[in-house]
Amino acid sequence: MGKIEQIWIKRFHRGPMDPVTHGTLVAGQGLLDSANQGGRRQVTLIARERWNLAVQSMGIHIDPILRRANVLVAGIDLENTRTRILQVGGCRLLIRGETRPCERMDEAVPGLQNALDAHWGGGAFAEILQGGEITAGDDVTWEDNTN
Image 1 (spheres, one colour):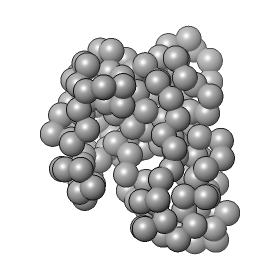
Image 2: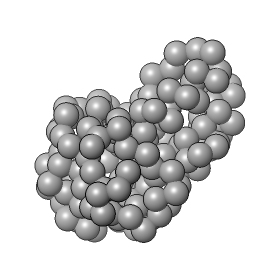
Image 3: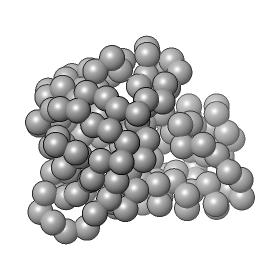
Image 4: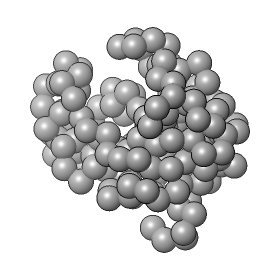
């Protein structure tokens, strides 16, 4: 079983990421008050373990807020999870695909895009099937009970 470690809201496109202790996931829309709404990319997630491997390969410490995802989870592997359903707190998320690292990563830290490129290091994006409140510390599990 995993946990939510951090939650971030993006105020506007290319805008700063604001850390929050809790948020509201709206079914079919996204993270309330975050810039990205609707479509298949309603919420983005990164895994603490993959993040740590990527930055360790660079030999530096980098805050995961620079990845610009909405939710940081620990204890859950997101690699190759397309079409799986993730339970986050009381919410259900349908993983739609890999969030590919983009040039924004290298704008933040040169080499970060390449470091995140393998094994879904950039995380995953999802549709919100069942919304609700999420809070740092909430449980995160796969609906099919496999890791």
